[in-house]
Amino acid sequence: MKHKIYRYTMVVIGCLITASAINLFYIPNMLLSGGVTGLGFIIYYLSGLPIGVMNLVLNIPLFYLAWKYMDKEYFFGSLATMTFLSFAIDGLHFLTAYTPDVPEKMLSCITGGVMYGLGMGLVYRVGGGTGGMDIIGGIINKYYSISQATTNFIFNIFLMICGTFFFGIESVLYTMLTFFIVFKVTNSITVGFDYKKNIIIISEHYEEIAEGIIKIVGRGVTYLYGEGAYTHQQRKVLFVVAKLTQVARIRQIVRKKDPGAFMIITEASDVFGRGFTSAPSGKHKQKKIFALINQYTSEDGEK
Image 1 (spheres, one colour):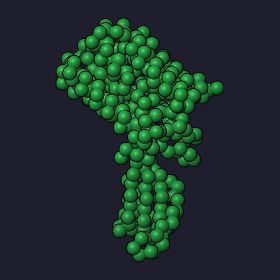
Image 2 (image 1 turned 90 degrees about the horizontal axis):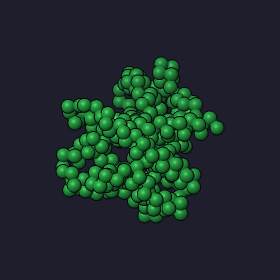
Image 3 (image 1 turned 90 degrees about the vertical axis):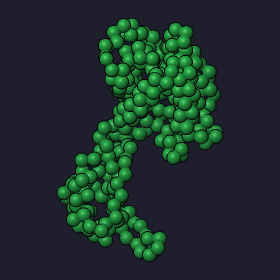
Image 4 (image 1 turned 30 degrees about the vertical axis):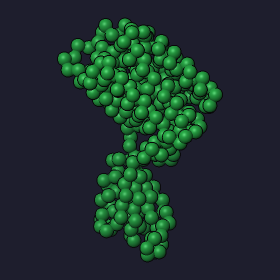
């Protein structure tokens, strides 16, 4: 029960922040959003029809598809989020009269992008979804193996072309800046700011290195068993997951014990378990798109 209250609270706060960003910075500066909401922006700028209402109308056929082809929990959760966001956008439209008087349009784009990304990040972090192109992308990925990221990219390119035709290249260029900011902020909020690193170490002095990491850095070390494809020599490989602030110290230990050690450091997008978090967050993030399709797997497929 507490988890549901927390989840719905975060969704409401996230939607209100996003709606505020739209009315304070996006609309006054003729910026566009991505996905189906972005199409609602174009219709609003051309006809004056409310963005929230258009978002609801444009999502009706998409949620019909979601009902037929996707998980029902995703359907009801995303429908509630999308509906509240749409009402929030129109309900907070009065904020356009209180747009900050900023001399540089770029500053408005940056601030609006940060607020928009913060709002969506809070929604996605607790497993919320807003429907729209997530539905189309998920279905296409399921039946045609085309990643959701590709589908969203193609649709957003279409929006940019329409925006250039109707509003000029300047508005589109500022919109692309906000796209980048929204992506980075949303990803940071969803994954978290406390970044982790995967570290793989191959060395003949693996025992000394492992002991140093455990005693000095205080991180656990796992032995993996590897074999060289050319030499067929078997040896133990060290696997460590560390916080960003601990990487430099681990590197120093490795270089001191074995300057010729082979070391690989990669990003870890989400880490949970003993020593990091008390409960997994990945289960909820997978519902961001819908329960049957993992977004991160889709993006890896694109690469």
